[in-house]
Figure 1: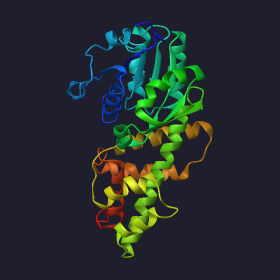
Figure 2: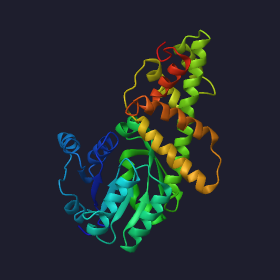
Figure 3: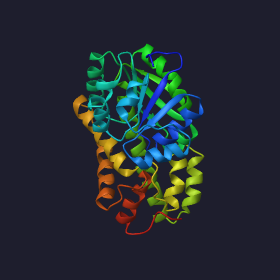
Length: 302
């Protein structure tokens, strides 16, 4: 279909723990969307929800006006862009690519440069809100790109989000996301440390959380991940290995910009301790397990 048509045809690439609920909401909105993932199991899961899926990425890209990617890391997005059946090879000039992954700000600029040569428009639009937000369609989108491209992307982003903030030119979306991840990770660490101290002082942790939610320490992390910490629920929403990836992206960007991030460096080391103990696949609230070991006691349960 011709790029820029009134009713866009969307290719959604990446049907994982975040991508599947996101594409589900996009499909439910009436958007003409087809999903793709390298994993047959992921494609099957989307198909079971009634979402059209493709087995051939190149053919899908040739038929699509908009390409949305939701992938784990920078090399995965680069592969979709530069691969033999990727965007540069198979998408038509005028196509809009919207990358909702969390990847390197520097890598994002390189991708944009390559796409510009083929007259393919680009918006970097990482999200915050986790799996819960992806399921509910309440993600916060941090968009980077020119005003026309972001406006064109808005209709695609709205069914998946409750807030879309245009941050500036391409790259500012990913720059915002690494800032966001620094704050989230340090907040998780702060909650872990508060619970550690509360347990050591003999405070009921459930009541401690309740009291904290009523004051200046109230936060999304305390509200959503605090109960999981207290219950010893390590189930993965946003996995520790992805938190490590995002913190490394933030620290790489900080090194390039000359910005000191001592607290982010410290929490990265704590997450690396979790990975060393085989916990990389757990949800990032399982940072509490590191504190169990440091305190030599089980602090994850009230």
